[in-house]
Image 1: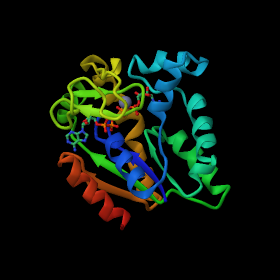
Image 2: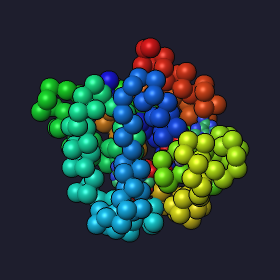
Image 3: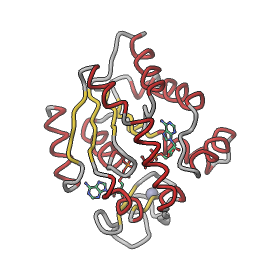
Image 4: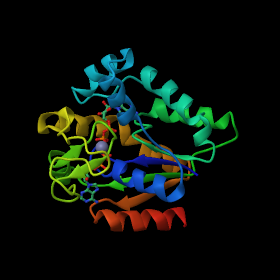
Length: 214
Ligand code: ADP
Ligand code: ADP
Ligand code: ZN
């Protein structure tokens, strides 16, 4: 099953993608997590990506598409995957469609998690991230067992630099300009499914399971 997650920054893509991956036994592939791991390890890619991420801009397609196409070609992705944060532009969607077409495949579900802009700032300012294992929390809606500590790996939780309100406003603009057009793209491809992302985390997941039919 090949699934992509669409939605504004903070809509809940990562939260739901992790649950889908666990439930269906497929890898969760997050381009944001891949970039953050590269930044942490001080790689060339990380250095380049950081310049864009800190400003709330998208990392250029040239640095992003090949990375994802390589990743979905690995053995653990043979039965499917859930892509979180990719594609984010029309050229990225086209690169994915073409890579899949070469193997006679296509995206099965594009799940768009809808959350109005008004809710996003609160989602992001309350988000806490573990940069070691990629787990995400929310101080109010999904708190860790112990404040400031990751339930999964015990590392300390942080407010991501790009979750500060000034950067979030930029990211929302970039989302509307560059990523929202993908809703039409995947509607035309016949695989778009919309979910109300303002509902509770568990309810959103129930709706996604209904869509995926299992
Ligand atoms: P995205 O990957 O789309 O940027 P996340 O999954 O990281 O979004 O969620 C953003 C923040 O909102 C996190 O702090 C997360 O815990 C919280 N969150 C996710 N889904 C919901 C929801 N349905 N209701 C309330 N808070 C949520
Ligand atoms: P969020 O969880 O809030 O949606 P991500 O973790 O997915 O954020 O992405 C963080 C940042 O990484 C983005 O603002 C962007 O700079 C960069 N990024 C992630 N995925 C992509 C992509 N597919 N194309 C370009 N930039 C990306
Ligand atoms: Zn962790």
